[in-house]
Image 1 (cartoon, helix red, strand yellow):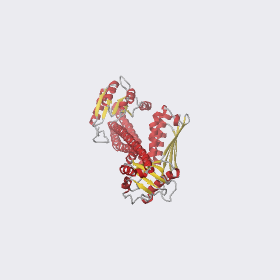
Image 2 (image 1 turned 90 degrees about the horizontal axis):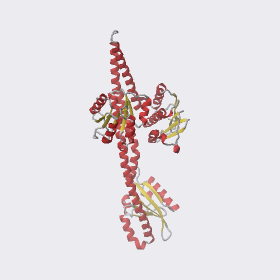
Image 3 (image 1 turned 60 degrees about the vertical axis):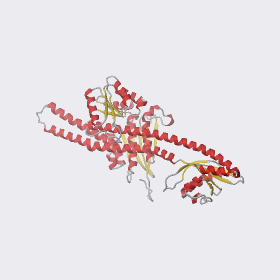
Image 4 (image 1 turned 180 degrees about the vertical axis):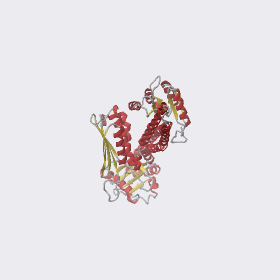
Length: 532
């Protein structure tokens, strides 16, 4: 192995690998290979020992042979995945015997994160292990971050509840103070002076008649400079407009309005406030709008960070796919092609009377290298298709359809409308990844004979649909655990569609096939309202 196993954070500990193989030579080779890459490696020769070590060391990744003397590798995989303490452990099944598509599907269905068929070049094996470790650590970091954010959100919500209780108490006190103004002005003023919340009162023309000191400090004005003014004189027009809308609802309908508002303009730092407005009537029958507010900017930021986290993870995954694809194409592929060329040269220089077995072995080696080269190029293409970067979405979809016609054994109907110009890169990538996931679901679950791919232009965007005539499934509220295997794929497709501001629709009827349709918006500028 020429390179080392990489991690997202150079300061993070070395990857921990559990390598399971009952063949001593294979086990020794794999252990030496990964140790040279900087991994902490734990060997095991059977399934029982693998389960014990998995519980003890909690590795990042288990490289697990399918054929073991005591417990089948797939059963070991199921037991590890069923252990809540090993939720972050990734598993790569490896086999030189069970290499058929059905064997790979069976391995992935039992919970494996990858299925590696032998023989495999050392560099490719290291690259695939590298990718699995990166994804495992990214997903682990995401889970931990979500737990931290959930805890922070819970704490913030608790604070809001506590502040709400304080505001409810303050509201009752405020009503009592207004009714008995002469007897309680001193207590009211003292309360408002030290209140941690914003508080104010406006008359029927929405002019301020009272503000507590915290509001004055926020506006950076004196009380005399604010009284008798309206929000349009104190805030930017968009902010004043939303405040007036809520004040009018309180005054006209006599209801309590509970909203969250941003009191900053577009050039200022956000200031999100949870605001409670309510009507007031004094002894003379005059109506007022009173309100109190609590700054919840940090809670809003935490919620925004939580919503943005899946998009950041998808961006990191695409960056890593691009890097691995480039390394496979420019590194491993070139090396394999060079070695194959040299073997071809050797084969051509062998004399006619050369040993037949030698000639046969050279030819086999050349053919094996050709197959390995094709496999590496296929992996590189699936990770990051060059057509997508160089020629755009239409070319990439057409190339994928041609490849399915040639290798998948399906009848492929492809209807791709030409686009006047290329879509934004993030839109093309999201649509293509959704297409890949949809096609993968057809291969895994549909048992279809025909697949139809349709890309259509629309007035305000583009739509892509992938339809098949397979077995279909139950959608919506009637869907049960038999569809749980594909639920993660559906979630990924929906997240990608939402990331580009689009939408995803899944239509399926048992026995009548499935259609997955994604729509993505395309922004139009100026007077050019034509289709993309």
